[in-house]
Each structure stands twice: as structure tokens, then as C-alpha cells.
Image (tube, rainbow over all chains, first blue to last red; front, side, top):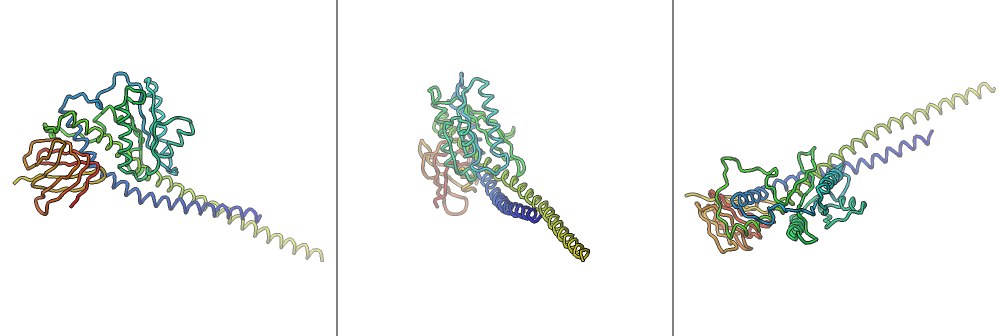
Length: 299
Length: 87
């Protein structure tokens, strides 16, 4: 009987240790969400300005730029997956990877070859385990993305896109990331960044807010040529920031439910341990009484 | 007198915003000065300084790399991946 009690006590201690860890992670994530959200908000003016400028150029010029035209026979499509470096964030990485797999099936159905670009250790591990190759991987810093990384990713993608026609190039670029909807909801989202689809969730100028007829300096082509990589950068950076905020939110939620579960376990095991203790005492009493009775009747 | 509404934004934050009397920037074509009432323009900045003369206060200098500048209805937006105020 004493063994039973010891087992329960051990389980309680183990649940308490786990709870300390999950509680700490929950609090850390909670504080980092604030920062991640602030960064998202801070980068909004940039994204808005870039999008506005790109749509202005695209609207007022009928230039056929490499980056805006649909390829006639697309052969290869790049898929960029934004996952996290660390786990313990609920379905954060798995849902984005699942979405990427669906996209892959769809693209292959259209006869395209999929080229993977992976961001975050989790996606890299997933693909490595399944022996799928990736064209390039970025690991580290998914929870606090820097603009340098975004620029690096964007440069790689634009280079691959421009290099199309040769073996290495790609004809389409899709990104898959977790969009930060609110603290409780993060939805995986697929966006095709190239060829350009300017209308994607960014506020469009309303009727009253007609874009003025711009003068371009130097020439329209050059302006578009310089703007588009910047636009891609800003899309990538935005996806990374959203993904980071989502990661923290998902982790906070996962860790909160883990803490709650630990609490529940501790409560249940405490009850069982109390029962076991009482049973032990009861048994001891009945043994003593029984023994005393036996002694009395033996006289 | 009319004023320019200016904002200097970099990828991760808004570096400066306010009203100004005049802006001098360097595009790939050369230096450009912007006063209130300037025609809408979209220009690519070459690496260099952007000088802002605010309505009140001392002139500012900002460094902007690989960005662009847009002017419309006296609203000037200077956008750069990395931008910072020098003084």
C-alpha cells in the first residue's frame, strides 16, 4: 500500500515540474506577442507605401515587365514554407506544412515541378525526414525575424525567378505562412507573390482616392524594375512578422492548456494519493485492532 | 503657405513624420528638390542623403538606402529598406 502512495507522490512532483516549465513558456510567449505585434504594426506604413507605389506603377503603365507577366509554359514553381524553429506551439508548424503539402499536390496536378524553400527548423526537419530536397533553407530567428533575412530570401527568390528558362529557375513563387488573425486564431495562408497579383488583402485605394498620374524618374521600366524586388521583400518580411506573431500566440495557447492539464493531473493525483493514505491508515488500524483482539482472545 | 506632409519609413518602423517646407533628395537621375505643389512623381533613390527642412525646427538629414520616393498632393513618402536619421 505504501508503494502506491509513493507512486502517486512521484507523479504529482513530475506534473508540478512540468507545470513550472509550461507556465514559464506561456509567460515568455505572452510578453513576446506584444513585441511581435508592435513590430507588425511598425512595418505597416512601409508595406502600405510599397504596395501603393507598385499598384500606381502597374496601373499607369502598360509595360510588360518580367516580374508581372504570366509565363506561357510554367514548368517549375517555388513554394516557400514559413514554419518555426522550435516546437511546443500546438499545430503551428504542422498546419502550415499540411497546407504546403496540399499546395504541392495541387501544383503537381497542374503539371508543375515543385521547388521547396524552407524557413524554420521544423519545416527543414520534416522535409529531411521524408527525404524531400529543398533548394534553400533558412534556420534560426523565426521568432524574431530580421529584415536582412527577408531580403536574403527575397533576393534568392527573385534571382531564381529571373533565371527561369534555364534549369535552375522557377516560373511561379508561392508563399505559405500562418497569418496572424487574432490572439486565438492563426490561419495558414497561401499567397502567390510572383507573377504579381497586386490585389491581396492590402487596402486598395477607394473610388475617391484615385491614384494620381505620376511622373516617373528615371523611366517606368526602371522604376518598376527597382520597385518589384522591394515589393517582394516587403511581402516576405510581412509574412515573417505575421508568422512570428502567430508562433508566439500559438505557443502561448498551447502552453496555457498544458499548464491547465498539469493542474488537473496534480488535483487528480492528490485525491488518489489522499485515498491511498487513508486506505493505508485504515488498514493499519484494522491490523492493530485485529492483532489486539487476537491477543485478548488468546489469553 | 502650403506644406508638405512627409513620412520617412523603413522596413521595420516609421523613421520620421511631420510637415516640411522643402525636401532635397538624390534620385538615380540626380538631385531633386521638392516644394509644396510639386507634381506627382515616383523616383528611385540612389544611396545618399535626404535633406528635410521642417516647418519648425532645424533641418534634418536622413540616410536612405535602396528606396524610392513618391510625391502626390503634397504628401511625400520616402521609403527605404533601411533608413535612419543622421541628425
